Length: 255
Picture 1: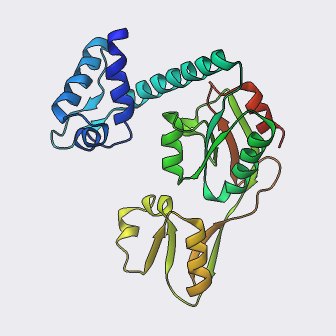
Picture 2 (picture 1 turned 120 degrees about the vertical axis):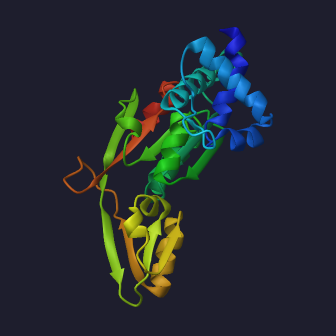
Picture 3 (picture 1 turned 30 degrees about the vertical axis):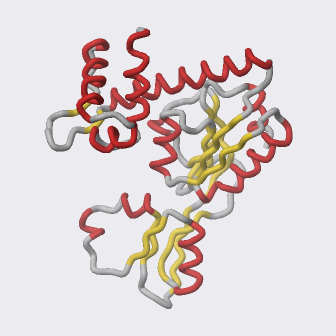
């Protein structure tokens, strides 16, 4: 399997991009070379990684994403093991992602890591739901604060932190509809074609600020409540990668 390490590395770096053209531009190799490496993986592993049913719009198959996820996690685990072998310490760099409505939880956890562990570098970023899940599944994030589990999968490191409601608020100063990127992408084609004024932003801060200034209809997350999510509420969940240090995860379980 050693001869597949480079093709797997390229696949892992290419998966975030929707097709070979975009991937080759970002990965830094030609499209024919990238195509050959993917074909090499398909032949060696007897799996289809590219959906070629539409020649002009090839896309990654679910198997390609799963293979990239497996490879990425193994690489992260190896990197962590080497670092721990070198100096006998805990993981020193952690990447946390969250929904903007859960940023206070992520911030709190990040502070605890810096204060009570050997973590020296903390990456703390906000994503919409789809990006958060995609980045966690390819191990670009070590920890994620989310309202649903990617693929309904049960993770080794997983904890329910409570729940919150998404509450509609209508300020009648204007008829503007204000959407998050995730909300807008979830609309049907019929809903999108309606002749209305819209604002679409991936920033909860900007959406709320716009509504405060100019009015409009918006959905806002409530405060986070303790306990199990009742009907109509969204769960608040923190998940960690399998390779995460147990010592670091224990800090997540304590707050």
